[in-house]
Amino acid sequence: MRNHAFGALLSCAALFAASNANANTGVAFVHGTGSQTNAYNDYWQPRMVNNVRNGLANPANYVVINCDFNQYMWDSRAAGCLAGQLTTFINAKGITRLIVITHSNGGNVVRWIMSNPTYDSRYPNIINKIIRVNALAPSSAGTPLADATINGNVFETSLGWLLGYKSDAVRMQQVSWMASYNANNLYGTSGRPALPKLFRSVVGTDVDSAIWDSDSYCAGYVENVGLETTQNWLNSCSDGFLNCSSQSAAGSVWFQDKTRMAGSEPLSHNQSRRACFGLDTILRNDMK
Image 1 (cartoon, rainbow, N blue to C red):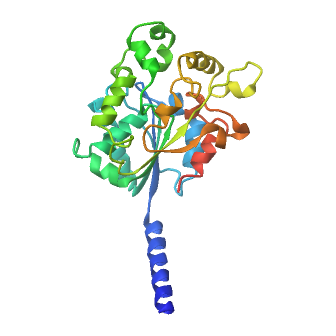
Image 2 (cartoon, one colour; image 1 turned 90 degrees about the vertical axis):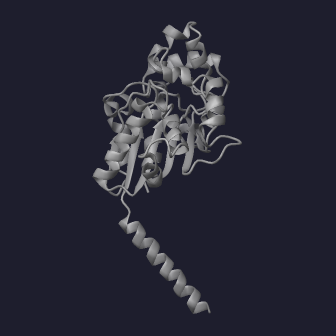
Image 3 (cartoon, rainbow, N blue to C red; image 1 turned 180 degrees about the vertical axis):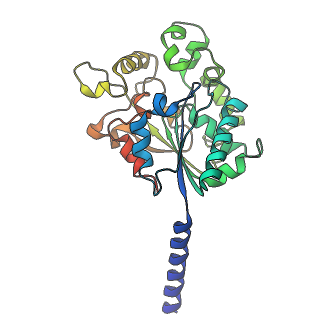
């Protein structure tokens, strides 16, 4: 009996090894709010993308998405564009295992696809290929700053660089609107069905912008000063754009910034899409 069990175990191990040998893993970088035409340079920057993709068995198996995420998540220019670019990537590279890295509102667009498989004929194949989504500072429950921008106060001008003014994507990320979408259209939040694939968030908990601290300059000192200012309108646990509760609302929390970043540094909303404090290396080591 023991020999039969051992033989069965060896057979299972061999099948697992064979399936892994035939696997072809790729990574997709999905930006947040905004219309991108060169997200590799403008949104993520080369150091972030290249260090992460070099963790793949084949570093050429990557795609940087460029879509118009100023639109509602279900719009053909948002989810439709994302589905098209992911499908092209999967087919061109023969991807069998897809790791998706999202930032901010990009997590909502990916959640729309995973929550609505019958909405677009391309969605099921994408969902089937995804093995996990690493959501960096996802705006899963929206942000009070979107409410402030839509209501037309000071944020309309002072946060234009971050929010894109009164776009449909900003309107969508109002707290009450996201609560409605989460309750009716999206999976993964409390009381709703689970997402079909792992969706885990990296949560930014604070912003540092001290002029004497070199860490404040990662991803742009001026941007971090702005995010520390807007943090005054958010909870004490926030990345300057999103409350921690919003970042943690869907799926599961992979980790909070200070528990894994070099020097226990926090990640501002801008830093969580850049190679700051070892984030890129953590993501690189996850390319399995």
